[in-house]
Amino acid sequence: MRRYGPEAAKDIWDAPCRGIERIVSGIKQFNIECGLLEQDSLFLGLGKHGKEEVESEAECRKSVGFTDQTIYEGDALKSILGAEGYAAGIRYTGTYGVNPLLCLQGFKDVLIDNGMQVFESTEVIRLEGHTAFTRGGSVTADHIIIAVDKLQGHMSPLADEVFHAQTFLSVSEPLTDKDLIRLFPSGKQMQCWDSRLVYTYFRLTGDNRLLVGGGTAITTYLKEAYNNHRIISRVIRRFKEHFPFLHDLSFIQFWPGLIDATRDLLPIIVRPPQQPHLHFVLGAVGLPWAAFAGSFAARNVLGEADEDYKKYYRYFSNRRHFALPSGLVKIIGKPLMFSLSNGWAKFYQVDHHRKHDEMKGEF
Image (cartoon, rainbow, N blue to C red):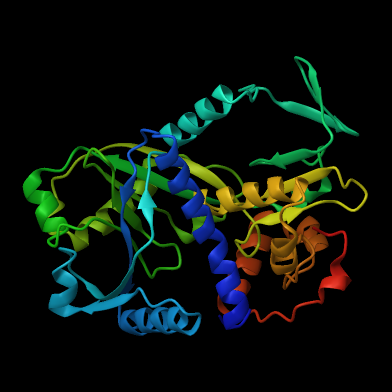
């Protein structure tokens, strides 16, 4: 809202919402067994400013036309979440949980059944014109969509625009029926996260296990992956402070991971002017963004995304405004560049959009 204003904020928020709709409709249409759960979202305010942050979130949502949110405080909050130490919460609908691996495998099977060829574990080592080369062969096509994590510099200079954030995720043993009732007293499951800068998030899986994730400000921006159980142990310990009845709940496995991201956490979708047959999708943080961006790139190839092009080019071009110039990364390094740019975009940046004609060929 601060950065773009209400009209643009609604446009941007609609993108991942459309991604969610696309994923859910596909799962239902093709009967993909992937633990799909309808789970409302619950944003939880912490500390003395927690209530203000929740109220600000509600005000922003109202200003762009979203009316499906409800604010909870005190006993009302405890009636939907059996937690301690949260000042307030805002809940809204239209969000879901899935097992992402099963979801992707299911969609892959549907695509193969409809004639698509899929070559897993096949690294593209170079692009020349309309041909993608691997160590096992090559593929030539009129259009190539490159939708990847960890783009390498030898593939495209756009790799300099991609950063990463590190997070940790852990899964618990199954909860008992008693614990489930205490966790969600109303019987309605929710995906929850708090108002910390590096927030803790949690939700139930289809087999009643808890997924809990988070990190620290230092490890989030590290240059390389940091695999240490102390980080997730601290996140779990902090989580259990809000849910004392889960004190003895065992978490049986954890995963560290580097999530590709841009400096402002919005994806980059770009067609290089000198290579109009290439379409890059980079820095899509989460399945809703990835589903929207991939669909957009495909529809752009097919000539079915003209109106979306006019709406979204200014937000997702690699040449959108950033507080620090790209060249500075060679001096200060990617971790510092990302943390400074990300912080500025989150709390201070205000954008002034270029006109559509000024950005021809960028998208």
